[in-house]
Image (cartoon, helix red, strand yellow):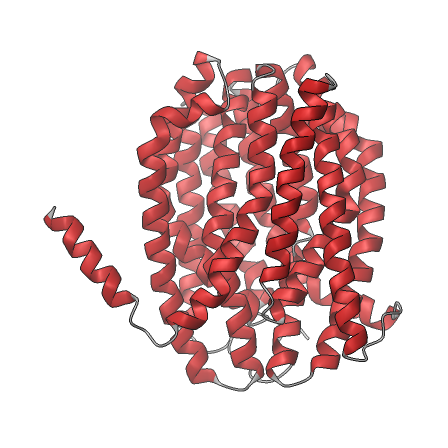
Length: 452
C-alpha cells in the first residue's frame, strides 16, 4: 500500500508540467488511432487461432512478411509527420500540404509495386518462414489475398503522417475506428459465415484497409486544394520525399530484420513455439503502438518546435515526454503481467501453445518500462529529422541482438529465452537513443532538417 501511494504521488507530480496539456492533446487521440491497427491483427489472430494451430502458425509467418513490407515503408508516415510539422511550425501551410500530396503519390506507386512483388513471391516466402508444409499453405493463402491491401496500407501511412504533422489526430482516429469495426465484422462473416477460412480473414482486412485509405486521402486532397497546393504528381518532390526516407528505411529494415530473425528461431523450435510467437508478437505490437502515442507527440511537437526555431522548448518537451514514456511503460507492463495467465485462452485452445506463451508474456511485461522510453526517444529524433543517426544506431542494435537470438536457436534454450533476448534488443536501442538525445547535434532549427 505504501508503495502504491508513493507511485501515485510521483505520478501526480509528473502531471504538473506546463507541457502536459500539449503532450496529451496529441498523445490521447494518437493512442486510440494507433491501437486500431494492431487490434485488426489481434482480431485476425483470435479468429484464426480457433481454427487450429497450423492456421495460427500460417498467420504468424504471413504476418511477419506483411508487417515487414509495410514496416519498411513507415518512413511515409514518419517522414511526412516531421516535414509537414516543420512547415506548419514555420507558417508555410501551402508547402506543408504540397509535401503531403507528394507523399500520397509516392505511397500509391510504391504500394502497387510492392503488392505485385509480394504476390509473385508469396509461395516461397511462406515456405521459408513456416515450420511445416500445412503451415506454409495457410501462410501462402493469407499472403496472396493480403497483397491487394498493400497500396491502401501505404496510403494510410502517408496520409496519417501528414495529418499528424498538421496536428489533426481526430481524422485518422475516426477512419481507423470505422475500419477496425468493419474488419471484425467482415472477418467473422467471411471465416465462419462463408467458411472461407484463412483467406476470409485476409479478405476482410483488405476491404477495411481500402475504406480507411480512401477516407484519409480524400481529406488530404480537399485540404490541399483549400491551401492552394497542387494535387498533381510532381516528380521532383516525389523523388525528394523518397530520398529523405532512405535513412528511415534503413533504420526500419534493421528493426524488421530483428523481428524476422526471432520468427525464424521460433519456427525452428516447432509449431507450438511459432504459434505462441505469433500471439506474443501481436501483443507486443499492440503495446508498442499504444506506447507509441507519446512517440507521436514527440514527432509532432518536436517538429513544430524546431520549425519555429525554439530549441529551449524542444529540450523541455523531450525531458517531459521521457517521463511520460516511463510511466506509460510501467502501466502497460503491470497490466500485461496481471492478465498473462489468462490472455492465452483468447487466442488458442492448444495447451502446448498456452504453456509456452505465459512465461514469455511475463518477460515482455518486465521490458515495457524500457520500451516506453525507447519509443519516446525514437519519436523525438524522427521528429527532428535525425534519420541518419537512427539508421546507424539500428545497425548497431541488430549486431547486438543477432547473437542473442541465434544463441537461443543453437542451444534450444526454449521459447521464453527468445523473449529474454528481445529484452537485450530493447536495452541496446535505449543505449543508442539515450546517448544521442544528451547532445545537441539533432536539434536543427528551421523548416528543414538534417535529412533535407
